Image (cartoon, rainbow, N blue to C red):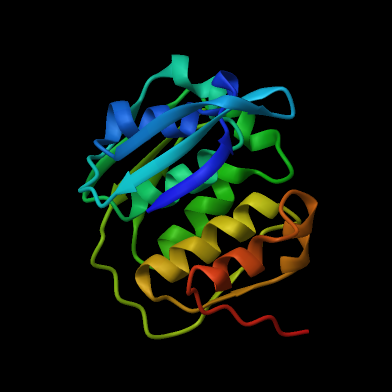
Length: 188
């Protein structure tokens, strides 16, 4: 998949860097000579990859703080144990993101273990769930979006309360998911 003209400010690509350097993702950035909003842009080429479990170094944490929920989802569908430490700040975001992720992952059979500032996820890409799983994101847009992605990855049906909170950071999220072929239904 090729994604064109993406803002690639070096302080905002921690997610891409950890996927490439620590999880074996096949992602190639081709930096372009043009800028968007006075920031560097790139075309991003992504190829299918067999991801490795992650031992997330503390020095990566500052550049990933907003991307941890989706990184936890990737760890959940990657075979093996992923470890995250130095992430206590996530307990004080829009919600306790560590707890919210754990609650739902445990509901679907993915084991986790946490402390105040760490999380282990025992990934299992073969989870099969027939029932609808309720998600309470507690007003946290990143939790709502992350479990939407997990549902699409594993074919799990999630009922996500207060989903409109995703408009906080990504009003076009559902449109993009549908454009990419994802099946999402919004019920009032």
